[in-house]
Structure formats: C-alpha cells, structure tokens
Amino acid sequence: MNTILSYITSLLLFITLFQHITYAQDERPHHFGIDITKTLTLPLIAKGRGFVIEPVYYYTDKDKSAKFKAVVGYSNTRHDDVHVNSNIKTSGFYLKPGIGTSLGKKNFAFLNFLVSNYSINNSYVLEGEYFGDYKGEYTHNNLFAMGIEPNIDFENDLGKKVKMILSLRFTYVFYNPENKDYPVYYVPGAGITNGNEISAGLSLYLII
Image 1 (cartoon, helix red, strand yellow):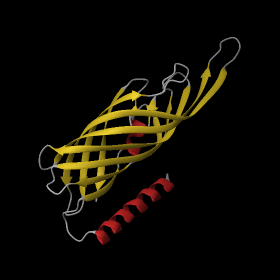
Image 2: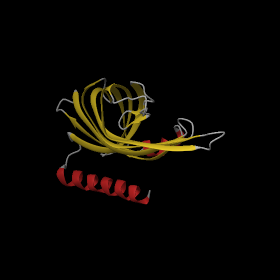
Image 3: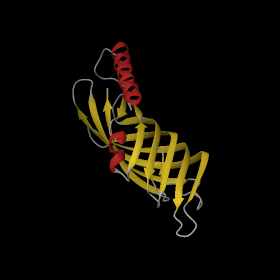
C-alpha cells in the first residue's frame, strides 16, 4: 500500500509541475487527474481488496462545447466468498477513450469505448462430508473485454487550477469471454459484472 501511495503522490506532483511549466494562463485546453475513490471503496463492495489506479485526461475545444476524455487504468483486486469458499483475483489494464458534449457550464455527457485486458485466478474449496475437502484452482490469462460507456461529468471548481469531477457511468460490455467453468465476476474498467453485460458506478476525479 505504501508503494501505491508513493506512486500516486509522485504522479500528482509530476502533473502539477508539468502544467505550471507548460501553461501560464488559467484557461487551459488540457487537464489531467486521477480517481481518488475506487481503492478506498473496494472493501465496501463484496469484500473487495486490492487497488485501482485510474488517471484521466481531458481536452476541451476552444468554445468549450465539446471535450475529449481518455481514462487509462490498472486494477489488482480480490473478492472473497463471491461463490462458496472461493477467492477470485483479477488484474489487468483498461482504456476508455470517448467524446462528450456540454450540458451546461459545468456538466458534460460522454460516450466512451472500453477495452480491457486482464487475467483471473480463482482458488476454491469444495467441502466433502465423507472424503474430505477438495481444493482447486484455475487461472486464465490474456482475456479481453469490450464495451461502451455512457457517462455524465459534474464539475466543481476548488480553485483557479483545481477541480473535482463526479462522473456517473453506465457500462454495457458487449464482448467478454464468459465461460461456465470460470465465471467472470469483475472486469477491470467495468467493475463488478458477475457474468452480466451491464454494470454501473461512479468516479471522483481530482483534476489539476
């Protein structure tokens, strides 16, 4: 966890230095940020553990009526007892580029495309009354998922060059290598799907 916090701190310091050097004016077309909620909320969702690192980049056009948004992330999570006596570990990278239009001075609606490349590992125990317990494990690497993600951003300025963005999303995963022998519970970038095609969630981005 100390390594993760050091990475996030270093990333934010780099972004701050980069923007102060590159831009002298307040009206900047480029903004960078990072999600500050996902790792903290993992323990609250289905006994989740691990971490999620999710930087975000925004480009705003001159008249501020349209934006480009790109989310890049890495997650390494574990969910215990989703299925009886099982521990599901999921790790992988994801990319979510998209375009958006203004819904007002501070709000934008986006449509993003999701590409996720990940691996899963599940260790489980089948309890046996007469012959003892059976312990099993399976691993599947290099899995791909794709989807689309309508989302809405709500901006709140914290200062001249700092803002918070609350992003609400709805994700439809139209391609995912689902198999009855290894049910996919969590897809990096889409969150908990539990074998379904639809998920929803939110992000809270610190933007500088």
